[in-house]
Amino acid sequence: MAEWAAKGESPEFLFWVGCAGSFDDRHKKVTRAFCEILQKLEISFAVLGTEESCTGDPARRSGNEFLFQMQAMSNIEVLNMYGVKKIVTACPHCFNTLKNEYPELGGNYDVIHHSQLLADLLAAGKIQLKEEEKEAVAFHDSCYLGRGNGIYEAPRDIILGLKKELKELKSCRTKGLCCGAGGAQVFKEPELGSIDIQTKRSQEIMDSGVQKVALACPFCMVMIQDGLNKHGKDKEIQVVDLAELVQQTMI
Image (cartoon, rainbow, N blue to C red; front, side, top):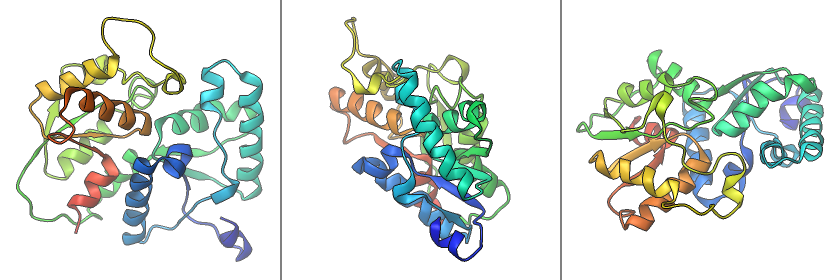
């Protein structure tokens, strides 16, 4: 972002990478896939790099409001310094915090999830597709994207727009089943119960009969993959982010 500012220019989007997209080896691939899509379509974007910090979502969800406000105010200061107007992110947790919680602290931005941008690009015919055999793809609704912000259609529009067969899971849309990682739960051991939630969710994916499940959240990526590993189905069912699905299918 600093390079754009030095030239007195502004990109169309500020891509908020997020902690998972920056440090988690698996989700770095999602970051790379999304960036490569934007570059191929010649959509101007910038990242904050080392100036980006955690949005503060895990701190607030775990009850540390003081830390959340410290992190949020620091980020807002940087974003406002660069005059950022539009933000796109591949993490529903970052999306929810930037869109719904930063305004009360002075951070007012047009924030979209990457599924919304990719769906719009597909609908506009800007993404050219390969000729491929139709495959069945299930979609797992992220809580912070679906029930938290009402975004159900954009991810499904992507799958259908890529000429895939959409398989709805038993628990979907407003009745979607949580992966078990939200609310800072990803950072702690699960509480006692008869079954881990990601194991139950993975069973629904297996029951759908697909060989590929798409999702749009780094936390869900970790939990769903872990659930499939526990079932011994990690080699049979591929877990992909929507950005990866688009990259795999576009020319």
